[in-house]
Amino acid sequence: MKYWLMKSEPATYSIDDLERDGVTSWEGVRNYQARNFMRDQMRKSDLVLFYHSNADPSGVAGVCRVVREGYPDSTIKEAGWVMVDVEFVEKFKRFVALEELKADKKLQGMLVTKRGTRLSVQPVDKMHFREVTRLGRIQR
DNA sequence: GCCAACGTTGGC
DNA sequence: GCCAACGTTGGC
Image (cartoon, rainbow, N blue to C red; front, side):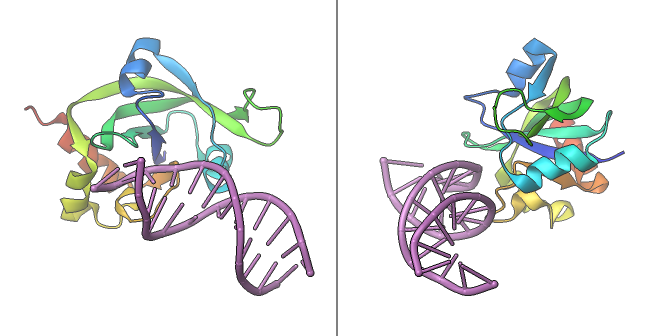
């Protein structure tokens, strides 16, 4: 069982949209490294941190789960791109901002906290995943 | 909206 | 295969 982080701009598709839809296809990935993760390593029932990028503020908004493994992205004519399906799991009680991720010593080395990491699909250590969900579940 | 960081393209 | 130019991502 692996853990992931996937980025979406909330203006385009947010955790609230996923909560409403229940399941969605994660289309539009056009980066080879991200595509390879989805195609080769992402498996059914893997858990994913839903990250809001280009947001105010950016950060992790909740969790979703892979329910369908990589298959051809039908939203583009060009062959070779894949998408996965994910289902809504939870919206955090407390949004975990990027600033908070960076400040947490337990999350040192987490890819999303590194400057210049643009990967929109990235692996997450189990311990990092646990720490982020712990933060997200703290009651306000 | 700015711009740094990064990925991709294409001329040579 | 190098690398400059260009396009995109994403924090701020």
